[in-house]
Image (cartoon, rainbow, N blue to C red; front, top):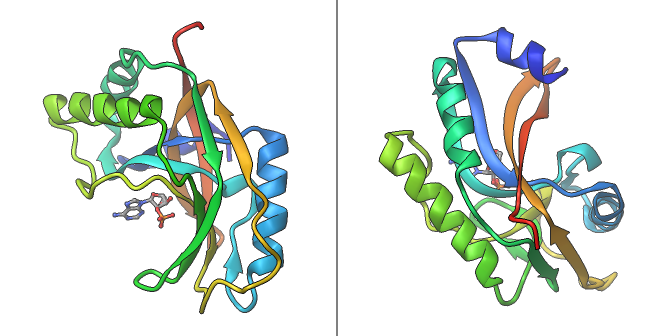
Length: 182
Ligand code: 2AM
């Protein structure tokens, strides 16, 4: 489904902002997810991302405003080490993330969320904990194979729409917002 079809599909859109990996990183994350999935559900390659702010169902009429407030966010390119994998019992996911969150990422999330708040756009207010979900419905993090650290160089963030198409959660990047030129 392309962005246009998604935008025309309904009065509300299920939206979130995310870092959206480029192809090589995506492939490596997906391969590792498959190896450790066990009876869990490895995220499909094209769905891997790191959520910055989850808006959920949002009035589609607000899309232009949401895009323009995101375009106002100034941030530096992000160098995010993905140097640890973990398991959360409460939502049964296997994830990977950084043992120390880079300042550029913390600042980006704070600025973006502050602009959403000011505009009265609702989002899930849970504190940001950077992670990429790799496997859902997992029972545990298997002991092997070991996680191989990766580095994610993110030069932009994205507004993403989510829809369930033929029973499958499908994401469409609606717009990318670039970092300030280095
Ligand atoms: P998760 O991977 O940790 O489940 C799309 O659903 C993305 O938004 C997922 O990455 C999901 O995180 C994240 N998200 C954050 N808050 C959410 C919420 N309240 N409901 C659904 N997804 C949420």
